[in-house]
Amino acid sequence: MGIGGCIGLLAVGAILTFAVDWHMAGINVDLVGIIMMIVGIIGLATYVSILKRRRTQPPSPGAPVVDVEEAPRYYK
Image 1 (cartoon, rainbow, N blue to C red):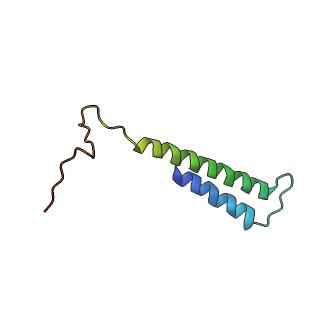
Image 2: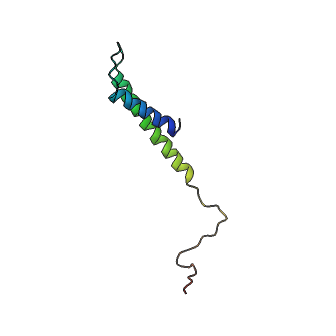
Image 3: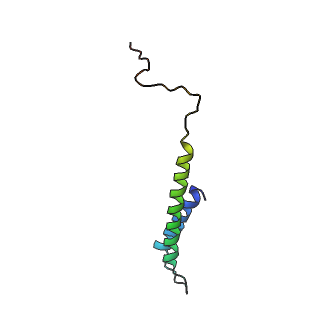
């Protein structure tokens, strides 16, 4: 499930919880909306944490390490 799906679950859950006045026999529409919002929040948090982990890359093993103290300084 991507970001769009998570945001969609949040939106539909919020609409069911706060904007709908249906009364169905055997189904609590408010509870269904709250569950959908919780699932959307959990999915969004999971997706963002995985995406954040994917973006950080370790430096390549052949890259030279430059120490800040030993770096040449060019002054005008």
